[in-house]
Image 1 (cartoon, rainbow, N blue to C red):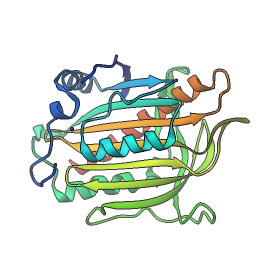
Image 2 (image 1 turned 180 degrees about the vertical axis):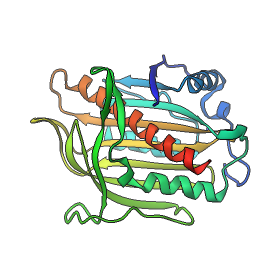
Image 3 (image 1 turned 30 degrees about the vertical axis):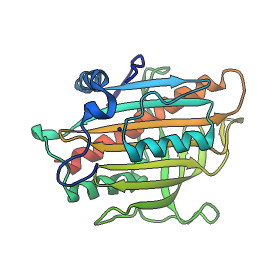
Length: 267
């Protein structure tokens, strides 16, 4: 289980295989890199939650990833932003870049959306583990919603679009679009809601007003994982905090899910 730790913001940008690109220090700054390594040794995340007038604080200085996240922010104009950094250490003291086979394995892991079903997170309010996604299935399109198998690739495509139908315990049954990007030293994807999301009977997030970005960057001995959930949410008293907490849980659950897959890729 990955535990969450709220750490104050610290102000702090490659390509060739088999050598990895930018170092961790270059991506996040030396001070934050040191904090990340300590957090990783304790199984913790570095997290920022902003519920009004948010700005990017944790985004790594990586050209492709930074541009993608900034464009998502600019297009959406969110009122809520949750950012997380996590350092996944490669096993066996490994200090070299991922191989093409490993990169493909990691890409196929994040397109295996059916495996999100049953994902759990630790609920601080309940003091116990709780299922996040009850069901998750790749579908053909948002209208027909015919189930499809998870895709698999021998070589990750530079771009890919998938649609998925997912049911979670906070926002119910919804359809999402997943946009993927892949390069020699990074894999990233963005989840966007294609249906309006409600918390019970209360409108929470309108159609196309949620973006969840996850970026995986190879830094040699580790993978730097950056995740951001952003939304233009309903202006109902108390709803912003509830959505912010849900997004925090969403990111923690997705990072735990990815870490489990990475363990199998690097075994």
